[in-house]
Amino acid sequence: MREQWYGSGVYRHFKEMMWRPLMKAPARSSAFFSFFFLLLFFGGFISTRLIDTTTTIAGDSAQKSVLTTKTTHIYPHKPDEIPKKPRKKIEIPLNCTALNLTRTCPSNYPTTSPPEDPDRPSPPQCPDYFRWIHEDLRPWKATGITRRMVESAKTTANFRLVVLNGRVYMERYRKSFQTRDTFTLWGVIQLLRRYPGKIPDLELMFDCVDWPVIKSEDYRGPNATDPPPLFRYCGDDATLDIVFPDWSFWGWSEINIKPWESLLKDLKEGNKRTSYFPLQAQVIGKAASDFIQEDLKMDYVYDYMFHLLNEYAKLLRFKPRVPRKAIEICSEKMACTVEGLEKKFMMESLVKGPTDTSPCAMPPPYDPPALHAFRRRKENSIKQVEIWEKKYWDSQSK
Image 1: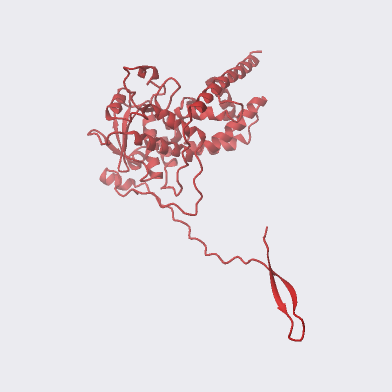
Image 2: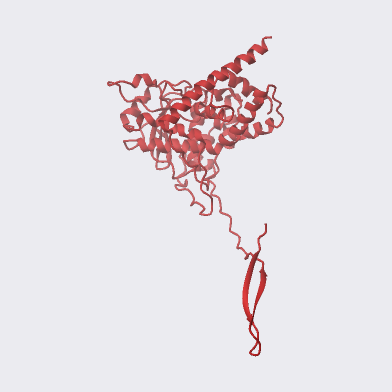
């Protein structure tokens, strides 16, 4: 699959979950995953009846009354149902003409989501990897997040993101590599188009570099300061960076990688033509493909963002505000002013309007014994993957 996927922060959690169907523990090994995903990528671009028994009295005055039983078969008749009128979906058109005239974002964006259909089943529970949202935010659970903490994350941040009254603002500190910041911000804007009125006011710092920098060992001990809450694409067990879906879910224009929703369709078609070689690769390939198509679909990417930002906002101990140097951003300001693949991928990944479904139900956090067991199994799984990896490369050198 795509190379940058292994550096994706969300994939830190996602890939661990992928191994659960395969063995007793999850695992990760970048080289082995590279081998596997290269295989994956190049392999394929009564009816019912009611019986009513009634008892009647038959006879006359000259005869003894006789008790008889009459059995009547009544077939249910389904009453004619009045067909429900389909709910009209709200669409938010991309108004480039108005942008050209006013140079400002539209003021008529929906501020609330459509009412939920009472006949619709309850939303499903989110995939298990959503539990890592609780773990990523645990360092601030007791203290909350103050403005001072957020400002301390500015050192390496590429931009500050502010959501206020359903509108998005950005204060840039340094340009990211390629269009990482652009498509990250585009993803946030699409989230608000999908769930208008459901993203709370918030303020955060975002670093678009891959490697995490908030080392947990620097914030231990009696004299330790509070860690800065810094969002990025990557994280590991030794750092406290808050993991956020990476930019390429909405496209990577520099190397012509399609938005994730389109790429998933290509992968699904390609997998139908894939032939795996070793049995282990076949088992892993099937499990990974199923996981990617079901648990990593774009609906869940947006729901992960939704729950992460909502849980983060609950921890804020200050009122978000728009900095003096911040600018408002919206779909028009981003998509109407670019050309080429940037525009193509933005239009392809544009959320047309609010969804009429609720986000998936957030699972509870791990309890300490379960989390400890998970990490222990992960270590054992890593060792197993390393054995598979060694066997593979040894076989290639013969």
